[in-house]
Amino acid sequence: MHRLSRLGRVLGPTSRPKQLGGGAWTVEAGGRTLVAKFGPGSLDEADGLRRLNEVPGAPPVPEIVMVEDDLLVTAAVDQAPRAPEHDESLGGGLAVLHSVALPNWGAGSSWIGACRVDSSPWQDAPGFYGARLRELAARCGLEGAVAPLVARLGELLPPGGPALLHGDLWWGNVLFGSDGQAWLIDPSVHGGHPEEDLAMLALFGTVPDRVFTSYLEVRPLEAGWQERVALFQLYPLLVHSILFGGGYVARAEAVARAFA
Image 1: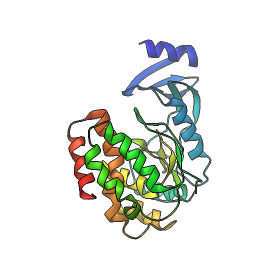
Image 2: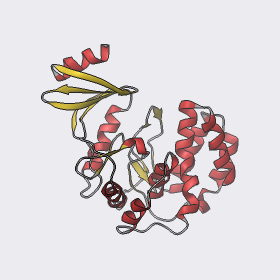
Image 3: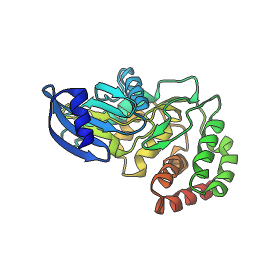
Image 4: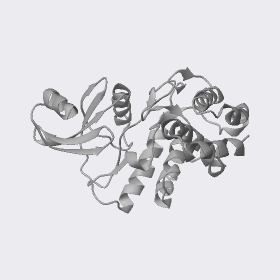
């Protein structure tokens, strides 16, 4: 209840609190429904929402109401049952987002969920992905399995410069709005390959054909992208290995060895 008391102090009178899971709650305050999320990385997440919101045609994101070091409050998204237009909106919007070129790889959020990551900027893709994968692998005992893959990144990665990514794009961070649009929450923005977002989306659920069809109407994917899905899933698998252990470690090791 300490957290709810804190919300009352920063938002004024609140009512109808409901825990969403983890450190997130919905509350009524000021005549509207808000989502309050407690935890590290709030400032980075808010910055990511602002950056996504600045891209016309990208998937919409919730309005930021307030942010502190460990608290982010946003407007709640009015949701509806998933429909085909949501998948079409998601695919086209992601393609627009991925059309935004950035000057550096990385150089974004220092957090993905509750896991810290190095946000240093890089001029080359193998350097960025190699450093990130090595650092995460060291934290879950997979340095030996990941090292041969890192040595091959120059030949494994697709061409193209860094694009603006959501960075933590699994289905739990996609909301289906009553306006027919797919909304994005909880970003970990950085410069990366567009295939990274799409691969993460496929890690915990099927990506409907409508998403890809709408995506490809806006921008192409590099040849061979289907064979690289698992490669780009290694990053979130290592993050999950650090946060949750268990079977994620074995899955991450299997992917790393498949590309060694």
